[in-house]
Amino acid sequence: MSIEKVREYFKQWNLEDKILEFGVSSATVELAASALGCEPERIAKTLSFKGDSGCILVVVAGDAKIDNRKYKEKFGIKAKMLKPDEVLELVGHAIGGVCPFAVKQDNSIYLDQSLKRFTTVFPACGSSNSVIELTIPELEKYADCMEWVDVCKGWGENAV
Image 1 (cartoon, rainbow, N blue to C red):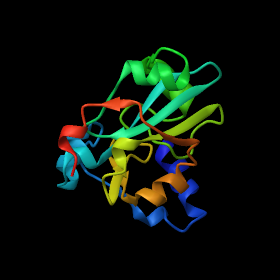
Image 2 (cartoon, rainbow, N blue to C red):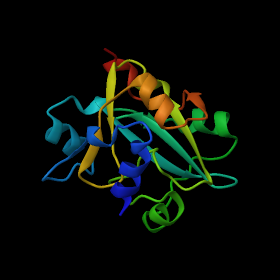
Image 3 (spheres, one colour):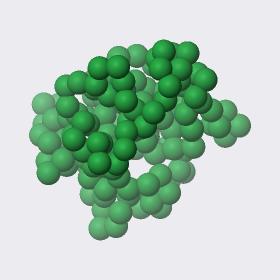
Image 4 (cartoon, rainbow, N blue to C red):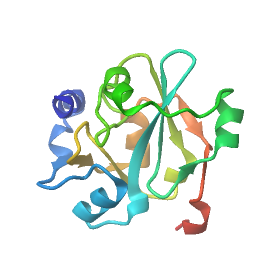
């Protein structure tokens, strides 16, 4: 099970007990925010795209949307999300639990600027009912991100 891979991944930092599991689904931004009692924009959703070699995972704020022009400028290819049946196979986590932790090796992880306005955010942990609260520096470290990018739109008007 994916959450067990993520729990094992966080053991190297003794953080496995920080993973929260809910009795309800947290598979969407709205459901996760409701389960946590927090603002939807603080949910760090991981979007999965086809890359030239492997996948491109972009972690963005819950209220952000991919800006196709910015994405193409950054990555040199059109933003094409993985199909639902490809996500588990190529990333290692099913839709609803996709996260930047314990993913398959052919994936490149990026963090979007939309996250930087928060002290802490809540990414999923491999299942449709789990999250972990991380500071932005912690997210950067534990997600093993390639770099910060600016490939989103729709969040600036909600900036804190």
